[in-house]
Image (cartoon, rainbow, N blue to C red; front, side, top):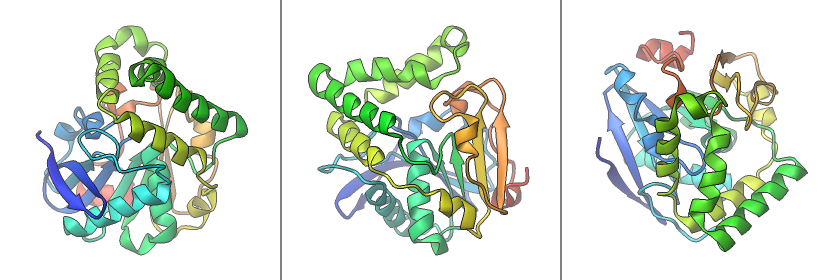
Length: 265
C-alpha cells in the first residue's frame, strides 16, 4: 500500500489508510514506520478506518530539528486527526507510539474514543535507561545509524524468533534504516526526558487496552501492566517479544468496529 502525505505545521507526515467507519490510528515504535503494520493491515475488517502514519523523523515523514519530546509527536498526530477528519479516533501506540499516545491522552482526552498501549508503558526511563539513550545517541554520531540498528533490532524479538523468523528480523532492520539519523537522535532524547504518565492510565475514563508480550525484554509484562484503571483491558500475548505485529497474527480485538471500540474482543 503506497504512502500518502499530509502537510502539517512544521512537518510532513506520510501515512497509510484503508477501510471506512470508526477511525483507528496505529502509531509505530522507535526506528519503525507504518510498514511495521504491513502484515496486520490485510487482516483487519473493512468496517474500520485504519490510519498508520510514519512519525516525524521516521519512514517517509520529514525530520524537523530536534529534540522530539512526546508532546511534539502528539501535536503532529492531533493535526493529522483534523487534517483527515477522523472524528474521535481510537489511538493505539506501539512502544514509542504508546508514549505519544499517553501524552495525547493526558492533554486532550476529549479527542479520543479510546486508546491502547502495545508493548509500552507509562513508567519513565530509569537512570540506567536514560544512560542507554545517551549511549545510543553517541553510537549514531560516531558509528552511524546502521550500527545502532544492528544492535537494536535483535533485542525486539523473542529469542526463539531470531532463528525461526530471520526474514522478519531483516525486515525490521530494513525499516529501521529508513529512519533519519537526526530523527533517531531527537527521538532518543525525547524518550529519555519523558515524564511518568502512569496516572493517566489510572485515572482516565476512556476505554484502555494494554498489550504485553510474554518474552518482551524491552517492556516486560510487569512494566506494561504496572498501572491500570477500571476501564482497562489487559492482554498478554504468548510466545512473542516486543514485535507482536510481526511475530504473531493474534493481536488485539479488531474484528469489528464495535469490538474495537469496546476492547472486549
